[in-house]
Length: 84
Image 1 (cartoon, rainbow, N blue to C red):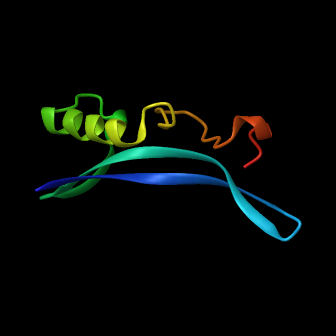
Image 2 (cartoon, rainbow, N blue to C red):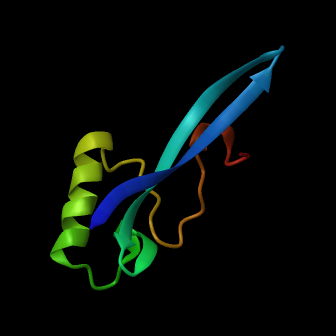
Image 3 (cartoon, helix red, strand yellow):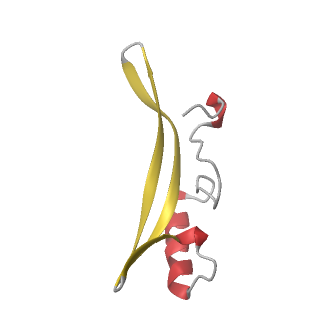
């Protein structure tokens, strides 16, 4: 059995005793149970049909514009100049 998941990256800002989310990015994950493994779905060099279906599901649910690409530096809010 396989499952789809994601790793969430939140950019948080704290000022004046308040904290808020200033940006969000995510890494889609593909999880195999036998043998157990977790892989970033969009980083797999030779994806199977199950990998492609997993990525498509996550993109339909959350959109593709906030996915972390292979080798990309994670910046949750570009407007902050990458200081997260």
